[in-house]
Image 1: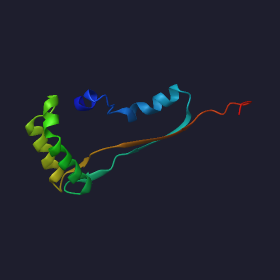
Image 2: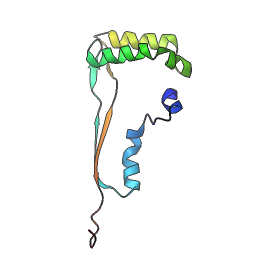
Image 3: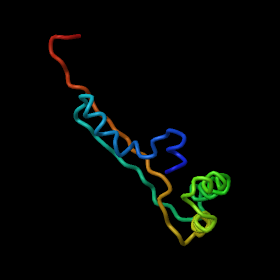
Length: 103
């Protein structure tokens, strides 16, 4: 989280998105959450493993992760018997109310 915060990125925008849309008058929200569960040593897990290895120094610089944390994550991502959710995608469909008398 620290790394995203330092880059002014909102790592949890999906959780706040419906509320923000409602604050701006959107209605009839349909919200979908796609969080695929995949086992280690498969496509997504391998990409996440490579990503963690590539970002190792940046993760360590945050102070939120240790060498052991990163090694454990990479081991998990490489183990076909381990299953995990590596990312989630939030989708929202909403509409503004129809205002009569205006075009």
